Amino acid sequence: MDINTIIIICLASVFVLFILVSLAITNYAGENLLTVYNEYKNTYSSFLKTYELAKIISDKEFNGNIVVNRTTGFLTDYYYNDSIYLSGDVYNSSSVSAFAVACHELGHAIQYRDTPKKMKKFNRNIVISKTVTKFTIPLFIIAIVLVFINFWFAISFAVASILTFLIGLFAKLSTIRIEKEASENAIELLKKYADFDEESIKDAKKVLSAAKLTYIASFLKSLVGWTMLVKKYDFY
Image 1 (cartoon, rainbow, N blue to C red):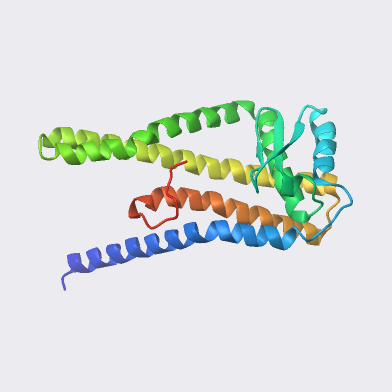
Image 2 (spheres, rainbow, N blue to C red):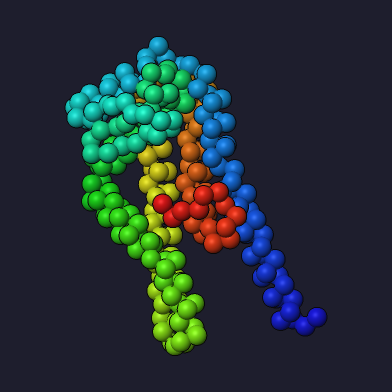
C-alpha cells in the first residue's frame, strides 16, 4: 500500500471509532443519570425538605426574590424568570440527589444575577440556533435535488445547510459551559447552606457529573444524529 492509502485508512478508522464512541455515550448518558440519581436519592443528609432548603437559599442569596414552585414529571426541574420549578420527586425529598438538582437550578439563578449580559446573550443565541437549525435538513434535501438541475445552486444550499448545522453545534457547546458553571455554583450552595459533609459533597458531585454527561451526549447526538443510530435524534 502507498502512503496515501495508509493515511486514508487511518483517517477512516479514527472517524469510525469517533462515531462508535459518540454513539456509546449518547445511548448511555440518560440511563447513567437515572442510575446515579436513584442511587443517591436514598442517601439523606438533612432533616430539611428540598423546597425548604431552596427557600432558605432564596432568602439568604436573593432576598427572597427566587420563587420555589413544584412542577410535574420526573427530573423536569428548571429555572425560568426568577423562579425554580422542582419535580415532585425532588420537591419533597431530603436526599443528596434532590438537593443537588435543586441547587443546580439555583446555580442558574446565580448566573442570571451575577452575569446578566452573558446569560441574555446565551438565551438569544439559543433562540436563534433553535430557529436556524430547523432549516438544516430541508436545505440539505434541496441541495440534493438541485444537483440534477444546477450544480452551483446545489453547492450554495449545501453550504447553507452546513452553516445552520454548525450554528446548532456551537449553541450546544455553549449549553455545556453554562450547565457546568451552574453545577459549580450548586456545590458552593450545598457547602454553604446544606451543611453537607465531605462524603455528601462527593455524592452530589457524582449526581451533577452524571447530569453534565447528558448535555455532552446531547451535543454528540447532534453531531452524529445523521447516522440515525441514536435514540430520538433532535437538535433540541
